[in-house]
Figure 1 (cartoon, rainbow, N blue to C red):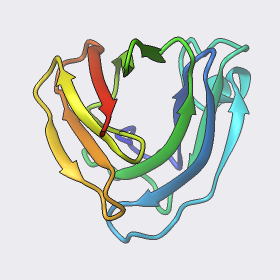
Figure 2 (cartoon, rainbow, N blue to C red):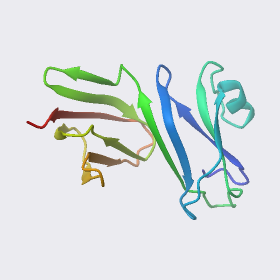
Figure 3 (tube, rainbow, N blue to C red):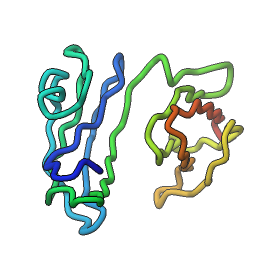
Length: 153
């Protein structure tokens, strides 16, 4: 969050997607932050220019106002259900969508291995053994990402 004085941050939920198991943390303290799902009209009233009324957003209540020329760093953890972006192709599962925020991660289901990723990524192992594909991009334009994985024998 970078708007000076802001006391909340609005994270969009992609149209056609369902977000579940959301959790938000203040990166400076590690403390969980209060949040709620709101409509586009509420987001627009909160400063999100052009937020469509039929869109949903996660409204995050910041622990402190954003300082002048500063930022409040957040960790937003959520699970998306989005049939247009996640699907099966033969013996592979596919994640294909554009990502508009700078840091993202795709966590594969248990017992799957990464087959390909079309952009540079860091491949990590989660504590429970699942594979995490961590992505960073710095462009103002959305990054088209294509990740393919297959079940281990």
